[in-house]
Image: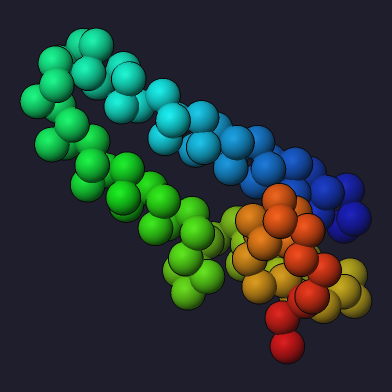
Length: 94
């Protein structure tokens, strides 16, 4: 069970890095391919991407799965994945 939990954490970590890199690269790719007018498309997509990855109220299914595995392992659940593993917040959710 612990191996499954750690595998999920690694997979989630890689996914977060991929979303970050995509968010940084997308405007440059869209401008080079479609011209400056494509910023009109990127701004709402970029805003949605930032909101989805940083909003503590949105339920990420991977975070929910991790909390289920943590509960089975006798560990307290976490509030957000980014807060716990990227920002170093050690406080678990109540």
